[in-house]
Length: 201
Image 1: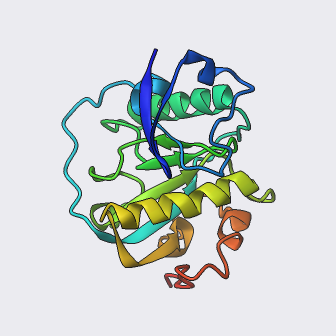
Image 2: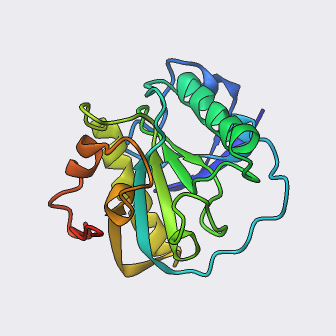
């Protein structure tokens, strides 16, 4: 199995050894996006709607699953999330644009160019970063936050995010969107230059 992922230093090749549980190649220090075929994604049941880019909103939210610290476990979590989204929630595909694991890797969901289904009323003009975990009391890992900065920079470089993008917490835009406020996830972004303190009333 060979697949290619674009990182900070360009494209690099991996083999199936990289799927072993103890081999977290990205580790948050380089941008490693694990493509859909590498986590054995189901194909979407219909063609995704194209997202008009660049967008100005990045919406961060939890997956509301257990967390993961190895690639093998993160792959499992992502696959189970897609299964839940499709089979239990009747979506066409996994609902997020990207998922960020505790292993410091980014997992491709719908990617940069397709409209997600992450937050009703905001899907058509935003990109979602879903963090694998709940984060009610536990903070995201340092690896997750480090790779977030790289993914944001890549989005700007590719013209998928506006240079003046804002980061919003899903719960802050729509308090009814989740029963888990994930305070520690949102608190981790406070002080970031693009973080928005907007809270819907």
